[in-house]
Image (tube, rainbow, N blue to C red):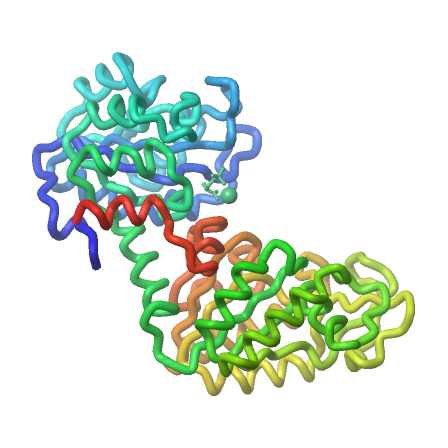
Length: 398
Ligand code: 3PG
Ligand code: MG
C-alpha cells in the first residue's frame, strides 16, 4: 500500500473528515439499497471508537443549481443511524459557519453528516477555495469513497493535498481486492465482460485484452463481435458500425496471447419481453427477425470449463437480458459456477460496475464472490487502466 490507512494514522482526539459515498438509491425519501452505507460502517465505528469526532462528507445526486430538498443528504441520516446503531447529527451546509458550529457541538466519538458537497459549484470544479474551506473543518482526511474516486472534486481530490490523509477501511478493501484481481493476480486470469454495447466499453476491452489471459464476452456486445466475424445476428442488439473496433480488439488479443471466448449458442426470440417464446440455437443459426437474448447452455458449459481452468476472475456486466426471465439463465448459471469455484477456494472472484451487482444479487450469489465492489463508474475506469484521482491524491500523501 502506497498510502496511509487507519493503522498508520493516529486519529485519537482529532476531528476526522471522512469522505464517504452516500450517493445511495432513494425512493420517496427512503434509502432502498443500504449496501454503500453498510460497507462504510466499519470505518465510522473504528474512528469513533478511537475517540475522534467523525465528520462525514458526501455528494448525493447531480444537483446543478445549489441546494434542493430532493438532493439533501438529510434523507439518508436515518439509514446511517440504523446501520451504525447510534444517533447521527446533521449540518445544513458542508462548509462555513453552519458546518463549524455543528462540529463544535459534536462530542468525541460522535458522528455528523454534512450536507451535500455538490450544493457548492466548487465541488465538481475542484475549486481550491472550497477544498480549503472543507480542510479547515478538521485535522485529518480519510477517504472511504472508492466509488467516487474517479472524480477529481474538492472533497475527493483537492482536500487530500491539504490535510494528513488516509484510506478508510472500505477504500482499503476495494483497492486490495482490485489489486489481487488485476495488478498482481494469480494466473490464469479470466474476465467476464457483458452488457449491451461495446461503444461504452472500448477502452475497458482494449485494456483487458492486455491484462487477462481469457476474455469471456456476453450480452449485446458479444453480438457485435460475432457480427464482426461474419456471423448473421438477425435482429439481435448489435452495433454494426463498431465492427472495425471489435476486430481491432480481437487482433490485439490474438497478438498478446489473450483468448477471447464468444457465445456458441443462445436463446433466440422474436420478442423482447419476459417469458417470450424462444428456442435454443447455435449462434450460426440465428434467423431473420430473431434476437439472441441470452447465451445458451453450450456456452454456459464452455465458460464453466474456462473458469475451472482460471485462478482469478474479474466480472463486469450481465450475459443476457437478465432483467427478463428466462433470459437471466446464462448470467445466473455462470455466476453460480464462479461462486462455487470461489467457495472451493479454486477461484478469486471480483465483480463490480453498473448492472453487475444487481445481476449477481439477482442470481443469489453476490455474497459468495470473493469481493463485490460498491463502485460503478470508478470500477469501470479502473478496469480501463486509468488512474483514479481520489486514489492518486492519497498516494501522494503517504
Ligand atoms: C456513483 O454512484 O457512481 C458515484 O457516487 C459517483 O457519482 P457520479 O457519477 O454522479 O459522479
Ligand atoms: Mg456514476
